Length: 471
Image (tube, rainbow, N blue to C red; front, side, top):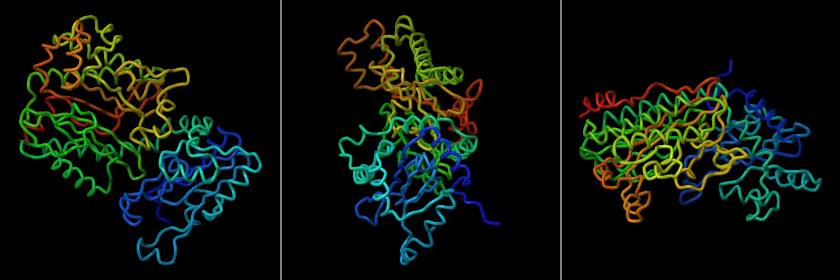
């Protein structure tokens, strides 16, 4: 009996996905170029390869140098690529040839990559529609320009909206086997987060913690699903500088996740005190962020717009800050006018799957919004990546945060912005909190949401117990 290929699902999975796509698109050809190796500073020195996620979803092949065409009218599927040369084994070892690739993905036909141009030109000469998705890598811009003759500056204009919406609709709803992959990734992610909580102590640098995470990830045979954010300056939302030294009294934020063997992502954030115990102000803000998250998770269910969950989480923030004396007035009015965004300037979460921000290469407004929805223009709410109605099978993050961003506080104060709603003097003692974010990955089920993966400590008593044993 042949050993199962642990890098792919079974061939019938990809055939069924392509059949569903054929039905949704209905006519014309679907052209899906795969990714190429990305050189760092010479052709033979490149970043670790990662296949285009839509190509991976429909074909499962994580190898460079491939492209595919699906004829939605005849049902013919063709994979284009070249067999490795006889000397390739010296450099890369034995690899699959195109025939093996064709079989493992359940594809009907194979062809050399240099025939792709002729096949595309024949379709165009017959006035057939060639559907393609928005390219985001420079080499795929050039491929599509070469194959279809569309000027580079017009490629995005001619993207197939029909294919785009079909792919988003299909990939948004996760199959049980995909949920298993995400939960697999979350098991390792939990270990990474607990390791950081146990390791962090005053005197270390952020990169020491990142190194410990990298060592564990490598031992477990995985890789990060995105560049980790490990920082004592969490008020910088995407802070990738890791040279700061940890000090008692600071909070450390760890926003990181792992890929599964089939490249499904996880994404978790935890925030904890470097010195082992939260200060009174840190504890107040932490519990408020946790309340925002718990409120949002309780509201997750099919049919509700995620924008409405975001707004209710924001109102929970406003209620809490009014109780603490940092804000004044009616929480609903505070949120409707956008005053809360000084402390919560980003969206509540995003879809997740083969990408950490799932499918956002296809266009955030298509993925996170419905056709009858317009992105808000008000500060804070305009950063909401996911606003659409939720459906069973969606996987999303719930990631509220509260931040004290010095430059933003100073600017708003100097402009007297929302002076009747924000007590800037009362905010001052909280500046040292800097920022707190808590994030979990949620599956939308038939009646409610379910937190995926094993529990990762996030209650203050749990965190301080771990930190107490580490310091």
